[in-house]
Image 1 (tube, rainbow, N blue to C red):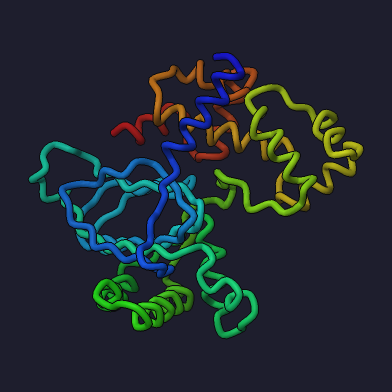
Image 2: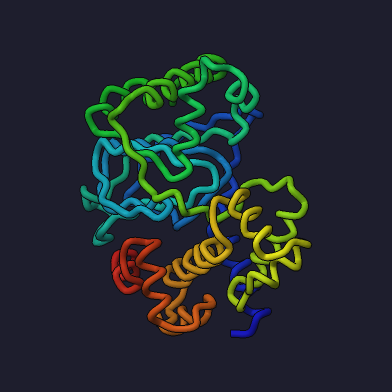
Length: 301
């Protein structure tokens, strides 16, 4: 695949993954009560935070780089721009009782109470919860069941009452110890909002060229720094070395190709910029905690 074709493919897959959430009436909050035969939403992400509570259905939940079973009583919060996907394990029949979905989904804007969360200590717990949600947070069933009446009421409420009730729900979620983070935290598909023009230039260059060979000297020169200074700067801004950042992007792209194409694993290895299959398998397993073949097997069940 030529460089131009790779860039077009990456753009196409980004469009497939990105869900545009429309919250009517200018409200920052949207609450849905899903009731349908089985999950159909693909692997996707959006800027809104999302709470998902499963009252009925079972299958496999994908959040960031985490994959595990879900069933009735499953409650998670997913952060802004975090890819996610709920999948029923068998689509044998629309009448299959194990398939039928009954779930409450709460979506609220990423700038929800932005200034208040930054400046008011009373909202400190909620701020911490939203930070943790960058890799997804799972809540134990015993806690989820206590929250179910309020989630149902949230669906019924409107306006100010819905706003206040969501704060109460988030505060309870933030205060419980019956929870755990899902992903490893090394799973950003979309870089954070970049205000540093120099970093923006670097990220844009990497986004367009990460399937090609990129050297430290090349990117350091682009930023007007020597390699040692650039390494300190980039690690401070992103929390990753240049090699880690590029390999994470390549593995993210490999996951998309595994999900959306019938390419062989060997072809995906070279399409994503790895120079040999051994390196590809090693980095993939480090990042996803399974081999590409196991990932494909789980995803295609």
